[in-house]
Length: 362
Ligand code: ADP
Ligand code: MG
Image 1 (cartoon, rainbow, N blue to C red):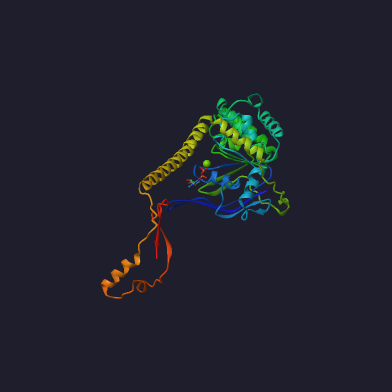
Image 2: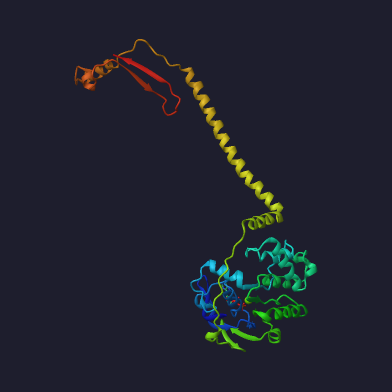
């Protein structure tokens, strides 16, 4: 059982706040055909989206079998949408490049059903809505009414307890609308169907209850329902949504194959990037090698000389110091003990390929 309790929902764009649902309280029976009527902008779609978990409410509560959804996490909403709700949209929302069989099958991929069973069930669902001989056609090869029947088959494939339809006949002529409405009435025989429409004639003829909305508030209800404690069923255990790894892989591959040109172009663009990086790296390598070669050539013009007899640096220092009149003994001034040693001076250290000058003094 589904219960809206003081639901509020508003949309804020820039500084403007639009109240879409204003304190809506409504309960639905497990088995009825409810039509929601109201002028455009009265909050019908918003209400349907809140019921279906496609949109979250700001205030109030949505009770499913008496259980609050205020603490629901994304995972819980996914399970709720996947297992208990079927959606039918005004614009069908079918995938144009897949056959209608594949379209219906797709709705089962999150339920962990084997590929064979998926195909059989999808085929049966299409036969049930009278499209048995069209299963291999693409949506564009069907009429509007047929596309909407595909959408209904897709919505019913998981055998949901609740079917939500947002203006399902909005884009159809009156003759085709009747076919779709007949189908919806049949569907409503054993489940809850909530349909948004702005055709009061269809609503009156087909549904068992009409709720009218205006400015986000309920202004009339032909068959109100106040649930008694006996109506509260025990909650069904939630079935988790899951998709097998192979199914996910097959879906991605199918998707790539439907857009061969784009896939090729993307691969080409990607390889340009990789080739570009490789080109820059090899250029940098070449320049480095060239610089090294030039360095080596340049240094070999000035060969290093190692002489057997050195000269005494300290004598120069002593001269300088004596000129300044500070002291006589250069070694003492420098703080150097007289020693015999070999000094190694590296030059060109930064370039990394410098030579070594050996100094010898006594
Ligand atoms: P209906 O389906 O009855 O025509 P909606 O439920 O789509 O009405 O919209 C109710 C109000 O909320 C409208 O005034 C609409 O402009 C506003 N609204 C709906 N969706 C959005 C949105 N995503 N962002 C901003 N405003 C929105
Ligand atoms: Mg709408």
